[in-house]
Amino acid sequence: MVPLAGEVAGRMGSLPLVAHNKAFDEKCIRAAFRTYGMDYPDYTFLCTVQKARRTIPRSLCPSFSLPYLCDFLGIPFCNHHNALADAEACAKIAMAIL
Image (cartoon, rainbow, N blue to C red):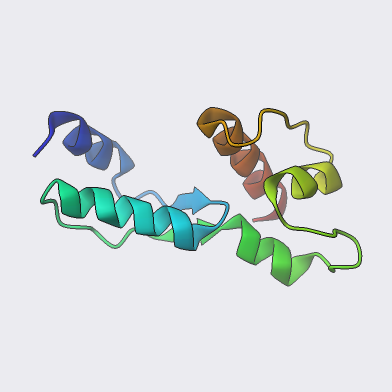
């Protein structure tokens, strides 16, 4: 096992993971675990896209992408597709709607 991968898995513990498009992120994390020969522990995964689609009428928010959803919720957001900026935006969305 790669030491960093084990450290990250250890820090995640049983906390739920939150993603903006769970399907994509979970697929990537599963692939990383597989690459390093680690068992995937079936994390609880929350999805801000799914929650937004269920709770915000499409007529109010034309898209549920990070930039549009942040704008709709009044969350400052710039530097889309920068991993840290996207993660921070997702966290702020989660705090607002989950």
